[in-house]
Image 1 (cartoon, rainbow, N blue to C red):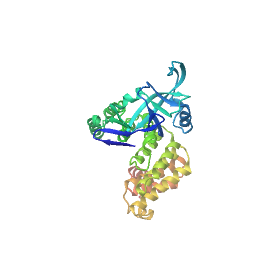
Image 2: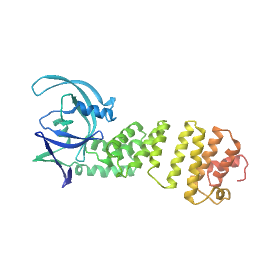
Image 3: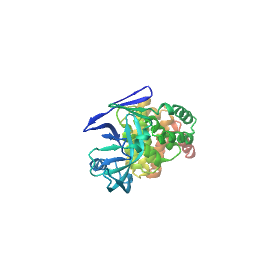
Image 4: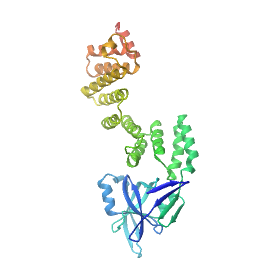
Length: 346
């Protein structure tokens, strides 16, 4: 366990076989590591590396190549070098840590000096590891980042966020801001990378950011024209809400994805569902729309898209006109212009 107090983190060490073990999370996987100030590098056991690969926590892009190192008795051995994307220790996160896989190592993970130094100032007190928190050092930066995001200056905010990241001091809010800033400046691949970091480290029932991250993943895939993957994450987002208003928007987004996938039936059915849920949210029926009792921009947008989809995908003039009229009755400008052009008195 660990406790944050008075600007420092206290981690209780577990003694096992003459060494101290520390709980940690590596690439989203819980394990225990040996904390060894006498070792120069970070090393991972072959068994634990294979487990990470099987669970999808270590991918091909994380393997950096082969190298050589010396053993305690002076022998030179070959090893495989890898990149550990995240190592979480007592609320501290180390990013992109170079490590080697050792086939004969008993400990799942051995944290050497190269990584220990990144944690900041540390003190060993019996079975306690004391780490001076970096959070207070970055409070001013985080305040500046918040102001920049409010002003929509995402590039400058991203630059300050990268400073915190390079110091290995990112927390969940920082990761979410990295997601937001990269999304807003259309760096979708980078946005998806940080979404992956969040999924590895914070994707649990307690996080209030789950829907935000899911929405960003779906948005990035949509912008990258990976519409099937976008649908998957929109559906995951929908599972987290009960509001008919929000559900109608999600159904509309899925309908848009199916439009680009040229799946007519799925496209139209999801836009139908979007209008049904919007009407339910507003407390009206389609009959009320026909009687000119409903003026709602969002509902008008859904009807206009139904009209457009019928026009583009089916050439069904009757349905195209019907939904254009409903859109015009709700106040949609495109539908109103269509009715005027077709000389329809809606």
